[in-house]
Image 1 (tube, rainbow, N blue to C red):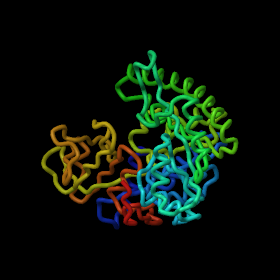
Image 2: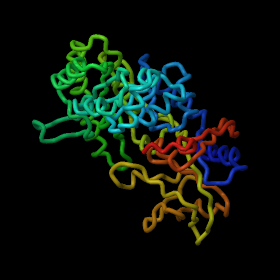
Image 3: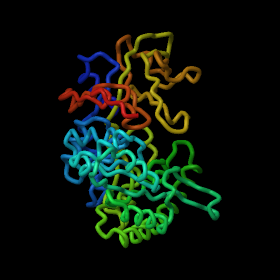
Image 4: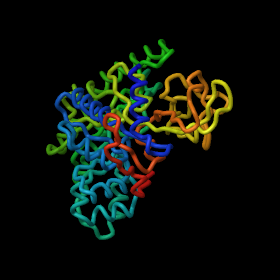
Length: 400
């Protein structure tokens, strides 16, 4: 029996008492992935990206482990909810226009002390001041540095369209604006190199593309390390008490951790290891989050149909954004239908061994987005469900 076949047998036994569709997290794999992130971070704390987990119980589990400290959140409403739930070190990784949320933040000393907001433009500070509604609490601010790689004099740009702050001088100018402004305190810098951390460099069947990605990423790492260090020096000249410099992501943990200017690493997807993280040479994780759909039809030889499963991930549309049939091995989508809203035909010789009611296990393309489809995660140890935990959705929270 292969390792994957053994996993399938474990998951089927553990969830035999549950009706599918069902979502699980294999805690042995989850913990092993957490250990690997800490190992690669080489002594620097890992801040957990909550959008990649979206389950409070699992956030609590990983933050209880040595090597993890703090949360990187994705909306202001989520940040406030987590702070009210007892989490006390929350970095909001994206600017917000949530006026009601800012009014709440600036009126509550506990929330204001727990949450750090993101800024890359002075008008975002204007919006916060306009939303205060009498709130006088000091707002903790983090500045974001653009990490994109510019080639050929800027004619070619590689990287996410995020912050407009690219140079150390631009970052220092905004730092001075924050320092001069009553009601704000500059505490951190963030620089997320998504074109390194979030792009696999070993694409199956694409050796030339994979080599080009590796060359791009090596160039990007060298350029960013120099520019990030200069930006941190420029900002520290304005704000000597800077508390943290955040960088990285699951795919670049060890590279970013090697930079002296970086004080902490961000990661989250590496806990669940969705299918997009199969294409990396820098690390190998264990799939921890899966979902199962029941077989409901047998249309013919070499074909079964499962219920639902059409759960595409965000990003540029393409086959890599689709879940992948994982267990049993050897199943594939019908190219004329793909994964469907209500039914999904699957092709391959393993279909002939599947009966009505049997499960097919899938892996989502991205990490936390799976939790927007399920209200409960069944937590498995060995071949037993040892606990169930609500997702954000299961707690009635749908932040985006």
